Image (tube, rainbow, N blue to C red; front, side, top):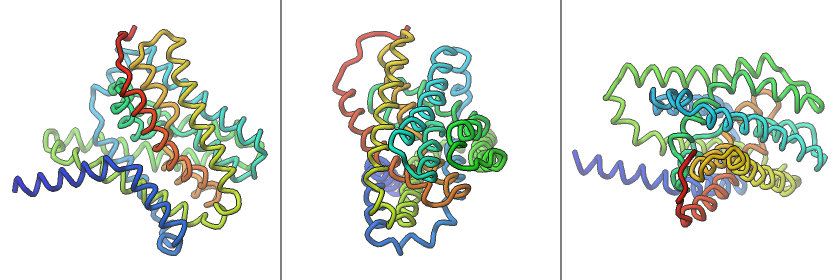
Length: 317
């Protein structure tokens, strides 16, 4: 029994540790052999709901109590998340003159909350993990209310934005599964502890599969416009990481908090962006989300490696 648990734990750790590799592998297979994933588009939305449900199970009461114990850091991080990234997305697609659907996809990525991968990267970067988890939780719960409004403001000039429909979808895909996960953990009590170690690996594989499906459905588009969209994604991510860090430091926060806010702002829930894009605007608009998912995990791993080598001497204020 113990050997089985040990083997499962090792497998889970292997899957989670090489998360970036799985995304690249699934994407490569999807690009060169799109027929493998092309018929699985209907799975994107339910799979995202599963990820959100898993996220809800991992949340604890302490994650929400920090909102009241560290209000300035939380408000700054959430403000940076929803003010910086949507605006940057809008400015980038305006500057590059992209097609309306790609523009909508980039803005949608920027309007999404932070993803659970940001918590892992923050931990590896020696950032404030507790702050990162709370920021992800709060921004995710606010998503159904802020994301439709941001899409209307920034993407409305290119396409017709179904605000009410996006709001309902966000409730169904994000808020409801997260709340169900929180309730289930409360009901199960300590029994939930046994499944928590396996959730990161499940989420990792599901996200990799979502990215693979989006890449397969846009394989031909990637050949023609993929390089330009990828460049936008790289710039968007880099500016988000930079702005998040600079805003935190300007507010007087310590290094560990600044790292957490930087990662939280720069790394988006691109899986959610892919689901909402294909649901309301079509598969082409989900291309920026798929490319963002590939890139932000690579850049996140790189920045975590760099920061991990730098010792943090100062204390948070």
